Length: 452
Image 1: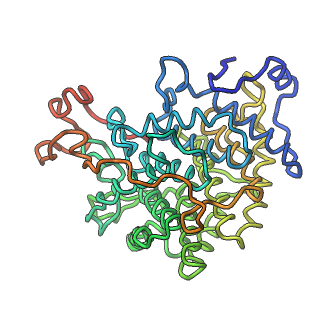
Image 2 (image 1 turned 120 degrees about the vertical axis):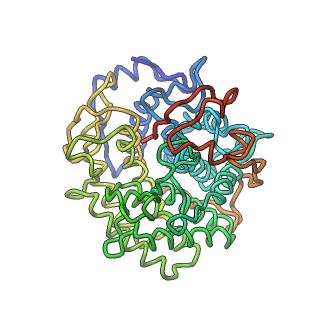
C-alpha cells in the first residue's frame, strides 16, 4: 500500500482494522460514524495525491488527472475540515493552493497554459472562495488571503467577456488552445457562481451585477433551457452559438444552483432568484434514480476521468444551497441520505478494501476507482453534517476574517504569457501555437489538446 506523506499518519493497527472490516460502515444518526466514514473516503482519495512528496510539485495530481481537478479536490478537503473539524489535510491544502496560485496569485501558472480554461482557473478560485466563506485558516503572513485569491481570479476573468454570441466567456483562455471558439456552460457557470458568492460575502452590488449579466446571457443564448431549466454543455461561437452540445451534467446544474442560491440570499429572497432556485432544483431531479444520484454517462459506462468527479461538485453545491436557502433543506438532505447509504456500499475495493466506485445506483463496486470517485463519496457522506456546520462567514455579517486585498498585479493574459499582444498572424487558427511564440517561456508546443 502507498502511504501518503501528509502530516497525519495511519498506524499499522488502524490499517489492519480497515482491511479486516472492508467496506465503509455508516450510521447517519451518529455524527461520529459520519466523520469516520468521511475520513476513510478522504484517506483513500489522498493516496492518489503525490504533490506533498519529496521532489514532487505541490498542487498537482499525477496522470491521468488534469490540473484543475487538484484544485477541485482541495475545495472538497476544505469542506471536509469545515464539516468534520479534522485538520489532517489542512497543511497539504494550504501548500498546494499557494504553490499553484502562480507569480500573479491568479491561479494561472505558465506551465499549465497548454490546457488552461476559464473553468480550470475558476475551480481553484472557488476553492479559495470556499476557504474564505468557511473560515479556513488563512495563509501565513506575507501571503495573500483566500478572499484576495478569489477576487483576483474574478478580476482576471471579467475582461474576458467576449462579444461573440452576444457575450459570455469562452472555454479556453488562450487562442492557441482547442476549445477557444467554444462557449461552455461550466466556464460561465463558475464565473456566475463566484460573482454571486463575492456579492454575498462583500455586499458589493458590482459583483451581483456581473452575476445577473452572466445569467441573462446564458438564458438569452438558450444554454439554460427555458422550458426545463436543464443546462446544456455549450455552443460554438463560429455559428453564433446556434448549434449546441446538448449533454447535461450534474456540475452544470449545481454551479448555477449555488450561484442562484447566493443571489437569493443576497436579495433577501427576492424574485426572480427564488423561482430560479426552485426550477434548478426541479431540473436536477433528472440526476436521481430512485433517490440515488447518478451522472448521465454512468449507464453507458463512458464517463471520462473528469466526469467521474462531477457528482462531488453537485453534492457540494447542493449542501451549500440547503444552508443558504433553508426551505430547500429537507428535500436536499433526504437525497443526501439515500445517496450516501448507496454510495458507501460501493466502497469495497482497492488495497484498503474501502476504495469506492462510481455507480452508486448499483450499490456494489463497479471497478471504477480514482480521485473523482473518492471525492464524490466523501462529499456525499460529509454533507450530512451540514446542519452542524457554522454559518458561512462574510464581511456583511462582520464575521469575515480572510484578507481581501487584491493579490495580483493586473497583468493581461497576453502580457503574462507572451510579453506582447497576440496578432492575427500569431493565432494561425485555434489549436496551433507557433514554435517562436513561447521560446524561453513554455518550450516547444504543437497542437494543443483540450483538457476534457
